[in-house]
Length: 314
Image (tube, rainbow, N blue to C red):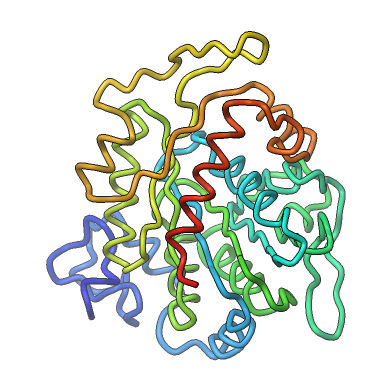
């Protein structure tokens, strides 16, 4: 099996994540990825043609990734999607595969919404006519219910989101992911392999404790052949909403995301300063960029989104 689909820290004779022996071969003993590989989908999958059919009408599939939790992946996913959908001619979908911590419904103001089915499949929950969202949060009876699932059940739900949701013709499908490089990541890469992933946007904060995990995510992307659109440095300083003065909160002790991007030969898309109104907007399900157009953080978002659009294939 090609090393391109060999997970991080795999042993020398790793059979590969798509092999029927993944997680079961003698070479897998002691590998930290053994359980993830053993529970990930393997071999020919009869649902792949259905996934390929659904995803064939999606122009750009963008993963929002980070090895670290709490760096702002979901808030970036939300504000990026709001911005992309500002053009009413652009069709945008958001797929939340953070199964155990689905915050996307709240950030889009969709708390309490439910999934509806039709003859063509599950219908996304729409924020606007051209912005649809799918999340496990729409399935839970109580938003406070814990999701205590092992890999196979997570994989099954991700597959349903891809094959059973009537996404229609989309210009962008933005996928919000949990931290790490585990079940959910392996599954979405495997399911989208044939129709292709446009690329991944990696989110980090300036301090080394976050950067060290993002370096692992960069390695993951390269091993499974996901193109890297670039790195975004989130929470890069605090901007006072009143005086617009900026203070450093998370010190970039090793040079921050820009230095990491240079060292790893990855495009640096830009830095977004902390603005407490970003959190407020996410809690209220609003577009921060529309609510606070004069914030330095809004200008940073707009510059980063412009950089992302430059990179995307036409």
